[in-house]
Image (cartoon, rainbow, N blue to C red; front, side, top):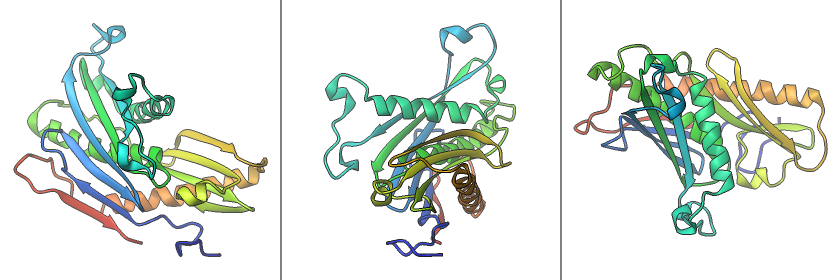
Amino acid sequence: MSLRRDGRASNQMRPLKITYGVYGNAHGSCLFEVGNTRVLCAVMIQDGVPPFLRGTGTGWLTAEYAMLPASTAMRTSREITLMKRNNRSVEISRLIGRALRAVVDLSALGEKTIYIDCDVLQADGGTRTASISGAYCALRQATQRWAVEGIVKKTVLRDSIVAVSVGALNGQVLLDVDFSEDSQVDADFNFVMTGSGTIIELQGATEKQPISWDTVQMMHIVARKGIDDILVALDQIPLVAYTPASQPSVCCSSK
């Protein structure tokens, strides 16, 4: 198994670090860091649902994704100054919301809406997958707080959810590609999967030439390993409901 430019094996994640409770006002929050990609995720819940759900007794979950100005080498303009949403931001926002709704029991919320905000502090590949994983971490913390405070009395999460990116280059499958690799790979796929092993969403396309189905199956195997690695890291820290008086807690997996 050949090593990559950063010394990782082809099936190895970048160093992972998760810091919980970074927002005092959010019901759940975390700074999710994988390599040099850093995403700040926050979760809050409010009364009310979109018009199409009013009177149904069912809740909703929605997400917003944005890249902060200094997240890239060339400054990214704030969308508010451009007076329009970036198409990529809209697409990823919908992906995050769609993915999290797949593991949330919306009927347990009553007519309440969960709001998830993912802000990219630094981008070095895999920001959408990091946002999904970080959003799950923040939501996991929030649900515990809601249970303790009686905001939501039923179990909300039906399964865990994690996402990873996998690239294919010259017949080799690469887990968790960074920006330098992403610009070189023949194909780039994003796997959104549950802890129980089912697939929520699979996004992918070739960049240069078609790839075989065998390669896609290899990508799935490597993605499953990466997802298991993240889930193991999440279990390395006891998760307690965050309050403004508590200290941020850190889960770190450096290998």
